[in-house]
Image (tube, rainbow, N blue to C red; front, side, top):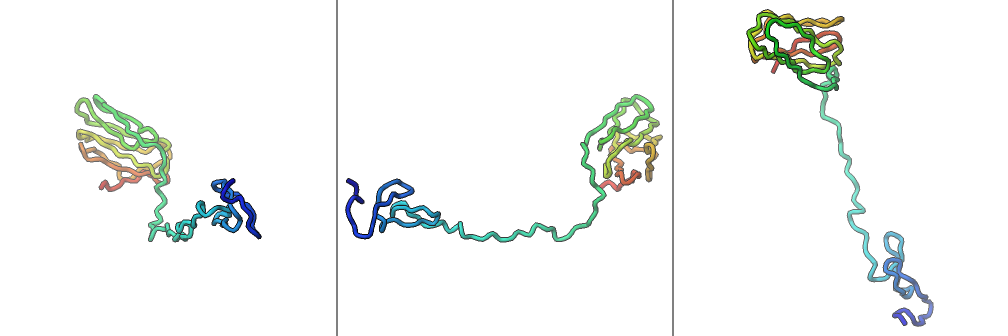
Length: 171
């Protein structure tokens, strides 16, 4: 016989829904989650259940609204090593175009990418001076302030916007 196996007027035997032991009805309590449990299995609801969330404002304090840089293509480097004068077209989705001449260069022609995404940046580098340089746009494009020379270790930066390659101030 268990500890709840006796007669008590107005009471009955109840099984605890947590531990499965038999108890008298007057000993059983209804817990916060709706279970009927014995005094040993009874517990108060955790205070963290009653905490209200605080709204977190995610807006930025201000925005410049400049949305013309939407370039999301892959960024790569194109590297050439000409031995004398050269003529080369920069590949699409190339951000860095590096000229590493094997010998002294007096002239060369660089043509900008044919199908650049809006906002694409192109940096032109060389590790030596190139005095007779021609930088040309591709078909249907224009270019601003095209350099006629490239000074070694001083990059020239262009940004594609609309159909125009705009020379940028390199900071």
